[in-house]
Length: 465
Image (cartoon, rainbow, N blue to C red):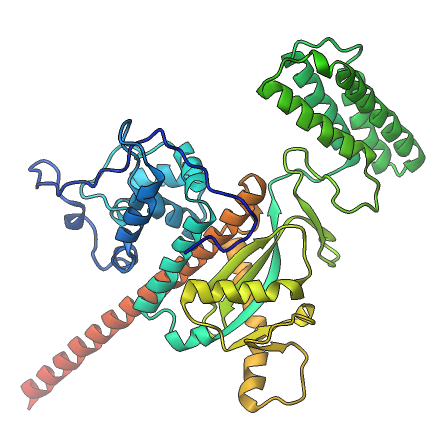
């Protein structure tokens, strides 16, 4: 399966490591008991581990290592398991590795035989693996959660024919954008690059600019907006002077990576200084220039700064069957066809019915019947019931933001947005499956207890008779 999200981004190929060597079966150790002898085999993570096709990742991800020399790569099952656990339990890279050392169920889930007392990898390895597998790899991770859900009974095959599609905003890990902060950060970064390149600036404003940036906030708090605007113009002038000074001496920088960094920063800061309040494609963060400003329309949060995300769930059950980032804040109706195509690719089932809100008017989809919220005419009782289920996708999105990590994306760039969105869908599906397995185990225990009580009552009845 090729990566569905057509952003033109390719996964990184790190060829310096050798292909992962399959681990031979380990013999019993007299001093170390096996994990299966320590843990409860009825635990939901143990059940879930048996439902996922781990051998698929061993086969597919082996192609990332064409070299036959070097250090053997990390086990693909370990990486896939850590990514699953990270987004199922809302953990950072560092936290999931630290929790792995403490939790024998995590170790069994990732394929360990004996209990390990040291971290399996450095947390930064997850960053390299995410770049390595790319969009195609995380979509395969989502596909395997859908297959595990069908095996466990958490999602029925017929429920894949009816989906609900909606969009939300995945905020980026950036500070709230203000002109004073952006001007000051741009000036400081230009000064640092000039120092690294050995260029002597006429004036760096190292003392004046930070004080003036703080004073802008005080003027705004006191509602002295005339003084605030004057201070902003002065601060913008400081940044512009540093920019022009560095631009005049740009030819003195020798060719190399540093010269490219200086050129990119000059272009970015020039865009920042020339943007106006009503421009489109504005810069809201220097380290994340792709961030979009999306109007939320609520009193408590007027705007959100991040990336729009399309979410497709089953109409009954709220199981994630499609998820993708939408850079550039496109119109919702223009994204429905691609969202339904992704659902078909991930589930091997073309949705027969899609239920959406009024933001999808003018979608142009003809292969799937689309019901738009607010439709009254021509609805059968079954379609009217399905349309009333449209709002069920809203709490699923809320759970992905509170129980999962969809509320804030910490990965860099457009590729990071694409990977993070799909991984959040994987975590949501795993939480659904784990809840289903817990309920299933509770039902079995309750049935066994009822059977024991019935047998005891019968014995007492026979004894009294």
